[in-house]
Length: 76
Figure (tube, helix red, strand yellow):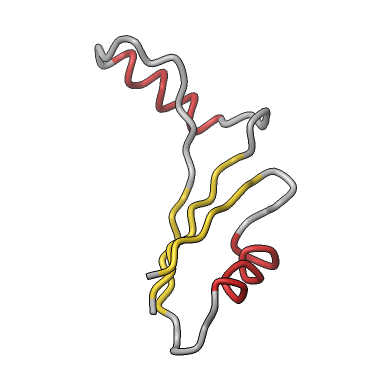
């Protein structure tokens, strides 16, 4: 079983990496970009029997800083 975790900074939290990407894209001639938010994707290869609740516990304890980040889990 596989799980994919998407981690993003919460709205209202400054994203300096996203701002740097937005600025660089503008400098490269890409117009019309008002904002960029950068996050991360974590793919887990899980043993049989692992549940979405297990993955959420991993996120709460290690994979996401829940004070400033939100996450979503996709199981397949």
